[in-house]
Every structure is written in structure tokens, then in C-alpha cells.
Image (cartoon, rainbow over all chains, first blue to last red; front, top):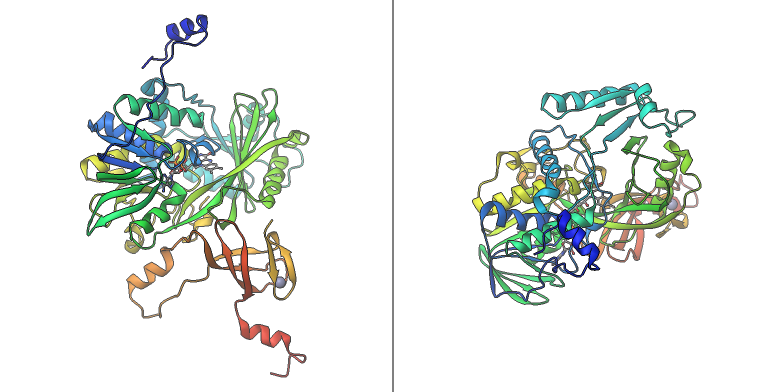
Length: 421
Length: 98
Ligand SMILES: Cc1cc2nc3c(=O)[nH]c(=O)nc-3n(C[C@H](O)[C@H](O)[C@H](O)COP(=O)(O)OP(=O)(O)OC[C@H]3O[C@@H](n4cnc5c(N)ncnc54)[C@H](O)[C@@H]3O)c2cc1C
Ligand SMILES: [Zn+2]
């Protein structure tokens, strides 16, 4: 595989980009694999890579029903942060952020990780106190966090509505190491690096049945034939319940909801940070891409859905939320919007765990926040599959936490998946 | 926009309603086992296809409705009041005549 480096970029610039290799192979499925990961999103691809890299397992396949990165991987608003508070979540997301910081080098692929800071606005003294509590806990746990007053905020982000916002902006909680990355690059980077270590990436390969022999999975039925597996990992985000049903495992603490994202035409540099706010039930986040488009999103569509298609009321809500803090966007045109199917859980936290089937492992329940989690998710899921022992950071991220009463509910929103934004 | 035919108000945009969720959940009796309660509160079938769910006509008659809808196409198959007794009462000419 041709490595990406300055010399190869320069050389190919001279010869019309004719000396690059394929980024990953397009192999025929083998009869059997040591590990099959179902789902070619970021979590599946990262898992395969770390299984090969950290655990030296060679005979791995990622099976993807469409094309890799065609699910939520390629539909999200790419915000990366680690401002979590609950034990386990905090260490996990902080480790993920550390992996992001070196990911382009690790994969020899530019994932365009940009630590431009995550600015979470607050609009009332009570909200400031709540943010102060959370960000103090982060500081105590070793994740640098700051509170900005109005003066600092105005200096850094001059265009926000400081004049007559319906909910006046009074300051912000800031994580400087947070930011964005290019989502497609992350999928392609993990795919290419995994492929180089021998991972078979099988696209257009939909799992349609899970053949069980009592407590074990024997093989998967796929649109490209039967494939045997010693171990199977599910990483299919919004489709988890469907695979769970194929494996005859009953119900899950997950509901599938859709979340939309919006992108505008390109404009000159306007916003250097990721800006977020939530007030009066509304929820909004915005950043500017390297191409100049404003990318933003808001709430779920509020009703359960497997359709990757957004509905109109949220278009209006999100546009209103944008206007509330950035009225200078009033004349910009929206050019696209789309939706992804989210695996929303009963407490807003994820699952990386074993299952009632001996050789089946589950990676799911990423809510709105699985993009930032991708590197650590792959890391700890691979660790679980290879060692069979849940690492201490994820020891409670299992399906039993509800019956034990140790829910990991960062927001305190209770058992209603749509409320865990 | 999804349009929901409210049995009290007629066909309205879904933005007038709030979503309740799964209407097929059967809560166990108060002295049911812990396992039954965990299952009812935390575990879902998360149906791909036609499902029964509740919607509240929050910006209308404020009645709870039971709606049969597809989670893949959003098509609505049926809408009925959650509390049929309530409907009977409302349809009485003289509400005091119970
Ligand atoms: C609009 C939107 C905005 C978001 N914004 C953010 C954000 O700013 N920050 C953040 O951290 N997170 C965000 N997220 C969440 C994040 O994108 C997801 O949590 C994450 O991508 C999920 O993991 P994944 O990439 O592995 O999922 P996916 O990319 O959805 O991967 C799952 C794959 O499984 C495949 N699959 C499904 N069924 C089968 C089958 N039967 N056989 C084979 N393959 C199958 C699918 O085709 C899909 O490719 C956002 C999500 C959306 C939709
Ligand atoms: Zn009504």
C-alpha cells in the first residue's frame, strides 16, 4: 500500500495521481473467520482494526449491508468532546479524545481532527451553576475545562446574538481540546489500516439470519452466502434490535429514533469553534466545515423511526435555534438535510458487553454521541472480544445495569430514550 | 409532515401532537416480580414495521390517542382514543346524562 507522505503526494502531483494503490481490497467472503464484525460504520471498522493491531488476530471480516460509512458514520455532525461526568463514561471518552489526538498518525490517514474548542453556552445563573459543577468534576478527573464569562465569550466569538436573544447569553463552559473531524476520512482511514493488517471488508453483504446452535452462533446468513464465525460482534447502531431479533434474544433497552443534520452553502470563515446550547427544551449545535458550510443539528424527530429521512418540523426548529444565537445567518441557504437512525438507550449510555450467547458480543446504544466515541469504542470492544474480560471502564456498560439499578444516566432524564440527547 | 386523524378534531399535522411511545407495554401488577418490572420499564421490542403507539394531542383536544403506524414508512393505519369510555361520554348530548 502506498503510504501517504509528503514525497508521495509531491510525486503523484507530478504524474497526474497515477501511482496510488487501491485503499482497501474487495475480497470474496471466506468460508470462516475468527471474528466477524457486523456493521461497517466507525465502530465496526475501528473494532476490526484494533483486534488486528492490539490483539494480533488475523482472520477478521467486517460485513456491511451497504457501503462502509453509509450509515450514521457519514451522517453525523462530527462533534468530538469528553465532557462526561459519570464514572466509566468519563474515562472512556477521555481515552477516546486521546486516541483522536494521534489518530491521523496512527492510521496514516488525515482524519482532519481539529481541536477548535467546544463552547457550551449558558443562559441563566442556574445553568451556569450546573455547568460549573460538571466542568469542576471534569477538572478533578484530569480533563481540562473552563468557564468563560461574557467578556471572554464576546472576544472569542463576536457574532453571537448578545443584544436581544430570547434567552440572553451569559457565558459558556468550554473544552478547548474538543472539536471536529472529517467523518468519511475516519471510516476510510480505519478501513484502509485494517485492510493492511488483513481485515476483509465485505460490502454489499447484509446479514439476514443468525444461525444458532443452542448457546453459540454457528454461522451468519448473508446476502453473499453463509459465513461461519468463531466469534461475532454486532455494531449496527440503529439496527441493533433487528439483529438481536434474528439471534432470538428478545427485547433490548434501545429504541430507534432518527436524528437530522443540516448543511448550508459555503461562506467565508465565520465560526472558529463548535457552539452548542440547550434551553427551554431546544437543543442546538453548530460548526463551520473547512469548505465553509455551516453544519448544524438539533433534536430528534421525537417519534420512533427506522427511516433515514427527516421530517419538516425539525427543519424549522433547528433554523429558529440557529437564528436565536446567530442572526447573521438569516439569509444563508440550506442546501441539504438528512437523517440517521440512532440507537437511543434507556439511560443515554452505551453498551459494550457480552450477551446471553457465548460467542456474541454487543456494541450499541450510542445515542447522539457515537462519533466521538469511535476510537475508544473500537479499542474496548476489541479488548472484550479478544480477552473476554470487560475492562474496568466499561464493566457497567452492559445490559444488566438496569436490573441492578446502576443506570448511567448523565442527564437524569429517566427511562425514555428520546430524552437522552 | 405526518398527518394524524384525531377522532375528536379531525386530520391535523403531527406537530400538534407529542409522542407518547410504545402502546403495547403491559405493566405488571404492583406485586409483580422485579424481573417483570425491569422488562416493562426498560426493555423494548423496537419494532421495524407496523407498531402500536400513543400520541397526545397536546395542542388540540389534549386527548391521548392510540395510533397504529409504520416505523419504516410512517404510514398511519388506524387512530383511536386511548380511553374509549371517554369518547362515549363526550358524544353524549347531555354530559350530565351518564
Ligand atoms: C444527524 C446525526 C448527527 C450526529 N452528530 C454527532 C456528533 O456531533 N458527535 C457524535 O459524537 N456523534 C454524533 N452522531 C452519532 C454517531 O454518528 C453515531 O453514534 C455513530 O456513527 C454510530 O456508530 P457507527 O458509525 O458504527 O454506526 P453506523 O455508521 O450507522 O454503522 C452501522 C452499520 O451497520 C450496517 N448494518 C445494519 N444492519 C446490517 C445488517 N443486517 N447486515 C450488515 N450490515 C448492517 C449499516 O448499514 C451501517 O453502515 C450523530 C448521528 C446523526 C445521525
Ligand atoms: Zn384532538
